[in-house]
Amino acid sequence: MAQDKEKLKKLLDFIKALAEEEGNEWFVDELKMNFPSVQTTQGNLANSMEIENLNMRISSIEKYLGLDFSTDTTDSIIDYSRIGGKENRNRLESDNREMLRWRYGTRSHIQDFYEYCRCAHQQAEFLLNYFYENVEQDLQSSIQHIKWFLPDYFTIRDTISDVSEIPYANKLSAFYKEHQNELGFYNRSILEKTNTTRNELLHRSPSNKDLQEWKKFFNTMKNSGFPVSEISFDFKVSEIKKDEQLYRNFIIKYGYTNKEYQNYLWHLFVERKPYGEVLQAVKTLAGIIQSNVVPSDR
Image 1 (cartoon, one colour):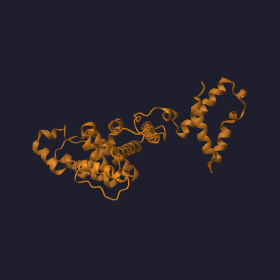
Image 2 (cartoon, rainbow, N blue to C red):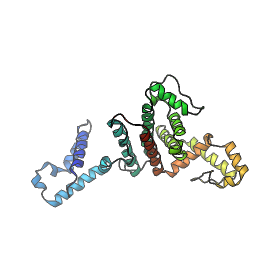
Image 3 (cartoon, one colour):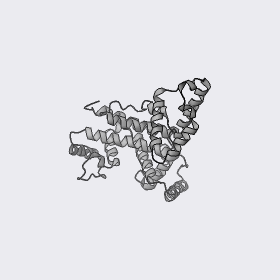
C-alpha cells in the first residue's frame, strides 16, 4: 500500500535539509548504501515485495528521526479558531501539537511531562498576553485593567513597554479574579503548577535540596497527625476538617502562602503527571479568552 504523498514530500524535504548541512556527509552515504533501489527507475520498483520493502524502510527512517506526520497534520486538540491573526493561531496550534508529541513520545521516543508542561505554559502565557493586548485600546489602559483586578501584594513597574513584560503570575492572578467563576480555582492551580514545572525544566531542577525540603515537610506533617501520603494530599477533603483545632493549626502554620507547602504540592503534581488536567486548564483558559476578545481579523 502506497504511503501518503504529502507525508513523503515532507520526509524528503527534511532529509534534503539534513543532507545539505555541513558535517552530515556520512548521512548521505548511509542513505545511498541503504536505499540503492531508490536510484533506479520506477520500473525496477514494480515488484510489490520491493515496494513493500521500501515502505518499511521509509517507516524506519520516520521512526529513527522521531517524526510523527499524523501529529503534524492533525487538528489541534484545543480550538484556537477564534484567535485573531493567522500567525497567532499557527503558533498556538504548533505548541498544542508539540504537547501531544511529548505526551506520547513521538518526537524523542520518550514521554516527558516537563516538556509537556513547557508547551502548555507557552500557550497559557501567549493567551494571557493576547487577552490583555486586545481587551483595551492601548498599553496603559491594559495595565490599568490588570491593576484593577490585581491583589495588593502584586505590583507592576511603570517602565514596561509591552504586556509581555508583566510577570505571568501577576497576569494569571488578575485574570482569575476577573473570571473566577469561569476559570475555577482548580484550573488556576494547575496553570500555576504547570508554570513551576516549566521553570524547573529551564533551571534543571528540582535539586537535591528541594527534594530534601519536600521530604522534611512531608515528615513534619505526618508526625503531626495529618493524613498525608507521598502521592496524594488534599486538606480540604481529608480527615483534618473533622478536627477543627487541627485544621486551624494547619491553616495558621502552613496555609496556601507557605513556600514549603507549595513545594510539597508541586512535587505531588509532578509525581501524578496529570496530562489531561493540564490540557483541560489550558483549554478552559483559551475558551474564556476567545469568548471575551473579538479579533479584528480572522
